[in-house]
Image (cartoon, rainbow, N blue to C red; front, side):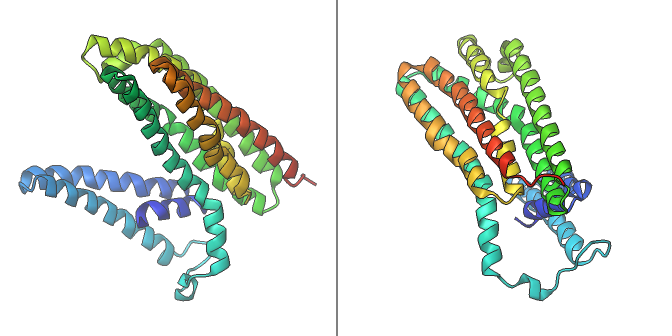
Length: 299
């Protein structure tokens, strides 16, 4: 919790290089310790767990050093600052909760999709979705990176009154997200068979997974819009649009589509996933227009 949580705080301060280092060092330490502990010390699974803990401990130590020992920083933290402050905690929860709900929503949606596929009685479809979900997770990682990079830029520049820079960063992020989404969707559609074949050996399952991936890829073209708008709203201190773009899109759009179209069989499930992303992106863009109207104008 210390390593990953502090990484976000470091990034919010504008130290993106050190924030990335907190993750890279943790992974490097774990990769180094795992073979030594698993094979060298013959600890097996226990060695793998100790290697993971070792990497996280190093990252946590780097985080604590950054905040409490490093001097080239705009502020210092004292013991008094660590005391809970009700208004601050309420603000943090209001602004940060949409990100938590978004992560929880992904799990909930996966459970519903699996349930819909189980209802069809097709084990092949379940295996196909598992592969498509892996590829989808990998493909959407850059969207997460763009959203996380946008948040401190917008918050920092808005706080300084440099609203034109915040808007410029938002527009660049939107263009980058759309361009990446289009390229990724095209690549997944064109390479559906070889990509699913990396995870599957059964020809029948590949024959199910490849068309499913092509349909799901349609939604991936705009999959980054919702998280991007939510991050932008959070950076402006506007939690309600962020809730709508994450939790609202999940409960009011994606879940009903999966439940309704899932009754049509496996093709309905794939169509529901794609349509859910497209509709959620449309709602997010409408929310963005509202945020634009409330963004302070440049003098």
